[in-house]
Length: 270
Length: 259
Image (cartoon, rainbow over all chains, first blue to last red; front, side, top):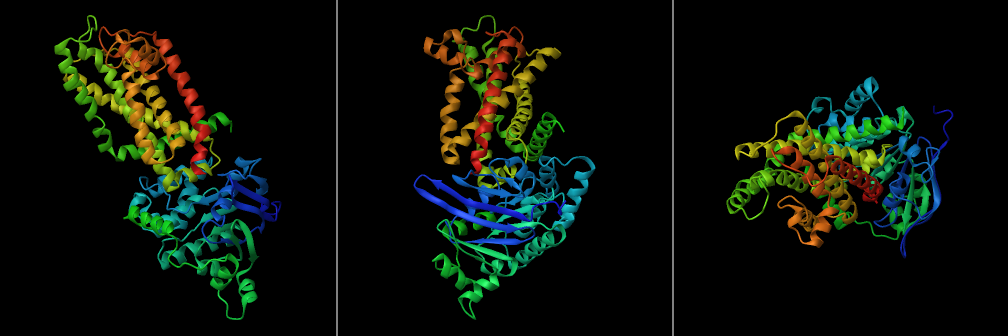
């Protein structure tokens, strides 16, 4: 019932994560209204993954608090999990299962059974455009097909908030645009709130309504892409904004680890 | 819906997916059958001739067949942890953990799949045993007892393996630890020789080794004239207790894989 649901989908108050001496996330305050596509940017180690892991209940915060879809992630993790979907960075659909089997597993773990499950799984296959290959093993799919499947899989249970970690990393330009379309579609039709992390400035610019740039675990700047660019100068690009606020030189090649991971992914899909 | 029903539905979902994967990869099942064949056909045949191990009225080959069945269960279940680490590296574990499913149901589902796989493995060992003319008991109750023992034993060692995987978290370390753990478990059990032959310290180890109880249950049921050191109820009681304990520990550590 969207009318009675809280207008804020995600909020964090002084959210902090320490690993011994190292502070991965330093008193982060965020508030994401419902129905937004929100982008978390920042160089590696800025705290993006830590934030997404705390918000999806995979990791406990050291201090501070966070609520997602109206529930506290520490106090009511199961209630949060009922209301979120998550697409990890790596292509993580199970390659040894078919598209349908991947979807059915997720549906069952979300407590969808019987006729509802059958209906949702076929809707999901249609949404992902994978009806023709529904019973093929996922390891035979292209990266773009796997990503579409994963977005469908993560939204089977109609979550209020969807989290995606680098949703288009390693995808070709066409597949990338298709994923963006799917995400926009979910926001329009379901009113879903979507939080993504990304290194891709184009993705941040054209997909996100609002951006937060993290730097060394802190919020460096927050705003709509247009507003952030305007702040820097008349012809500024989002890359300029990124360099200004993250103190990092934009590395188009990505880090060694990312390149290796995307190569691994490509190899796995072989 | 009652949490109890939810738990079993979630575990069944995980087990179902695992079994589908196993069915598609029968080569792995078959390659795991090679080892028991060698143990029975080579080691067993030779030691039957030597008569170096006193097994009473029982032929040595008959004596060791249940031991080798238990060993094959241990050796294939113990590598379940590798699969879990693989799933962690791919992000599959993360995906399972953001669902509202009970953590213990996710772990239990894997154990059920390992149990079913163990039954297939047992069928292969039976086949080898038949070819080697091991005197097998075919009455329904003993066969069912063996099946139950194989199932619970697979659950124990696969969950133990998952527990270790949750601690070491990398494949390289797991491979090392897997070897270090399986051989002592195997030798400190009654799989190859009666417990009475062991020195005192080894007997003490054997008494706390779940494999000993699995071998006992199997030896008392699988072969003609076979006897177990422990009563069947004791063996199964201890095995179920160990499984419950491991399930609780592994469920506690499993979410740590996503950190």
